Amino acid sequence: MTALVIAEHDNASLKASTLNTVTAAAQCAAEVHVLVAGHQCEAAAAAAAQIAGVSKVIVADAEQFANGLAENVAAQALALAKAYSHVLAPATAYGKNILPRVAACLDVGQISEITKVESPDTFERPIYAGNAIATVQSLDPIKVITVRATGFDAAGSGGGAAIEQADAVAEGGRSAFVSRELAKSDRPELTAAKIIVSGGRGMGSADNFKILEPLADKLGAAMGASRAAVDAGYVPNDWQVGQTGKIVAPQLYIAVGISGAIQHLAGMKDSKTIVAINKDPEAPIFSVADYGLVGDLFEAVPTLVKELG
Image (cartoon, rainbow, N blue to C red):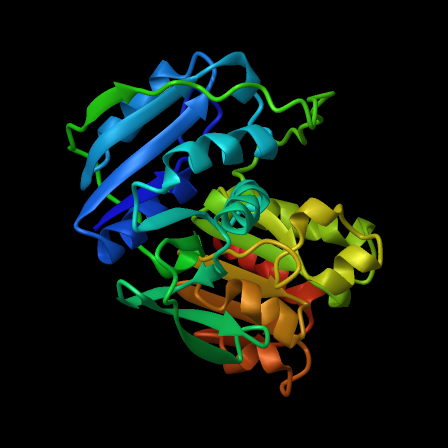
């Protein structure tokens, strides 16, 4: 059996989620190939060839792949898919946009957001906001799978895979790239950050969120928020951590003024160390916290910043 991983990249480098997906693929099949569909993407292909456990990198280099349009990348994956037992992609916006199209055209069921590989045809995935784990078995000839990156370690480097050029499929003409607006920040990207400082409804206002900035600066952390804080308009929605936001698993997650609704816990409970600050001793966040401080966050956070020097 051979697995095909659809790499997420920006033509110059691979996204970290691709490394986690390769780890999952290696547990599904004896051999792992990586598809890099892009334009002038030699650097991304070279990076993919260095991933430990990858035996071949297939490069489809054409202008229609420059912006990762799902219709075009899915068509390229379909041109290759029947040679593979498994087709995998990260459970990011990129992978979630491509793989359902692949699964539909192959007439197979997609297996979404797996966190564990039991065997080549059996997988675990969270359901009910992470409160239950479903074990699912697929009898389809080709398994189409999205991988929750937090469930698998990143694959290492040191590989030396062969790089093979593939014929690019023609432009589908069903969509066109118009523009891209990127949020600019000096802080680490939320899903890739090793430390995250998040605030919740308990912050009280957008202005009060500013008291978290010195703490994040001291720790070199990204800043996040609960859905309640986003819905209240305190911070932009790209800060949202949770089932309907971003799934994160940093080395350290500091939750400030977050009660710990099920939807939020589903997005961060795999963090290596969780610190919670909340004035309510019964807050659900304390059920997953490694360290908890019951107290007024407006006193605790400045004190913590001061202690950090």
